[in-house]
Amino acid sequence: VQCSLGQTPGSPDAKIVPLLFTLQRLALHTTPVTMAWQCSGQSNAALVANLKNAGIIQSPAVEKAMLAVDRASYAPKYVYEDSPQLLGYNVTISAPHMHAMCLEGLVGHLKPGMRALDVGSGSGYLTACMALMVGVQGLAVGIEHVPDLVTKSLENFKKDGKNSLLESGNLRVVVGDGRKGHPPEGPYDAIHVGAAAPTLPPALVEQLKPGGRLIIPVGTSNQALLQVDKGQDGKVTETVLSGVRYVPLTDLKDQIGS
Image (cartoon, rainbow, N blue to C red; front, side, top):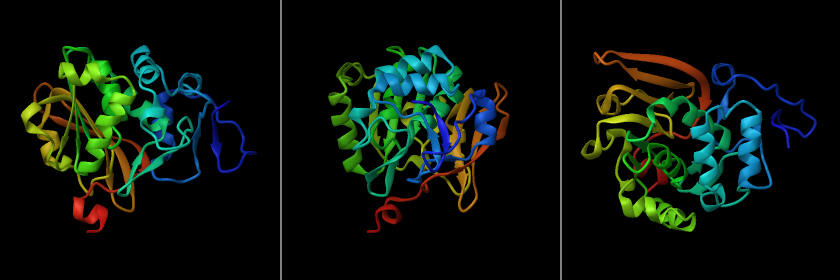
């Protein structure tokens, strides 16, 4: 299976391009639409191989983590298709190419012993990848404001054979408003946000360590994927990586309509 960009089976194959070009030039969709990078496979290994062959996965650490976390334990259907899937509660699990790109963007901040926060952790897929990357001396925390999804993510970890990560304390998932971060385990070397905030949440920037990096979609009708870096001197630099379409980062009442 080759990766292609288009809405029909007849669309031309996408060129294999460097990750930075991909991030800057492609619109990355994380709501259920048909246009997306197509790196689908018949197995988790095939999916990861296609992402690697397309130049989306570039580092051994990201490849190893995505091979070890089987998407079949986290996605409800079409588990190895390179597209987002609905989880319920107006929440999606992002397409595999989006997960790979975000992990690559954070790879230097997910080294062994580092601390990571996954805001809007949903199914728990990306949190598990982060936990494996930071290793047993590190910590990955997922924060999700839908209690049922937190419960489901814990089931998913067990289904995927990740009990040891939970038992060691290397991987944790908490119920909470991710817009406020999770100060008890901070500050963080890496923060990933899986939904679009109207503006950059100050609490997340505050919870970045000096030298840390935040990747977050920001905006409403027009959204951009931002890379936010905090220098050792505390100076914050924002870089626009791409235009995107994400579900909104909002409060629980607005999200589930109750």
